[in-house]
Length: 167
Image 1 (spheres, rainbow, N blue to C red):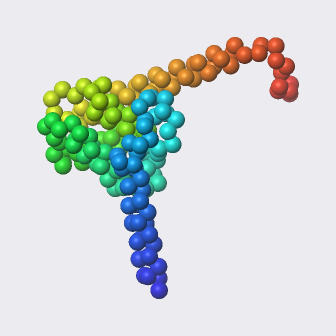
Image 2 (cartoon, rainbow, N blue to C red):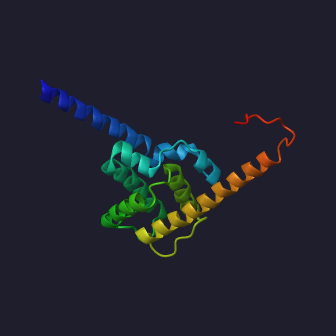
Image 3 (cartoon, rainbow, N blue to C red):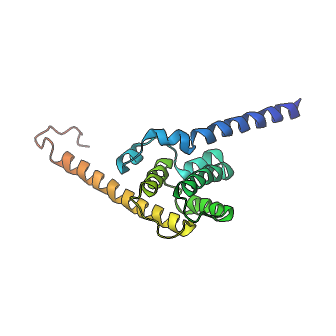
């Protein structure tokens, strides 16, 4: 009886992971039209680290591999080997766990559209370096937004009554 319950739980977990893998695939997420940093920041897609915590490393690696294969097929220059793609997925998991899937979509779209240039063949070092640059841009953009909100707040109604009470 207990073994049957475990088998059913494992089967339902596999079905759920297949659904999630499909939901996070390039075909599904490309429809979200993430073409700006603003849209990537506001996106509800999970972070790489969040996926690792919630779904596990193997699942997250599988999702990243699907995206790397997609980019590899779109670029059509000297393709990456299967080993290189696995290494790339692991490096993204290790180095860029705070990025959302939306960030990957944005970077991939920019590479495919020619906005980000890849000279020579596609490789782990080039993908990681593009993500490094994107992460830096993302931090700078977030800092600008935060500064802008702060400035707007500070320039607000200066004569507004105090809302907090003294001790």
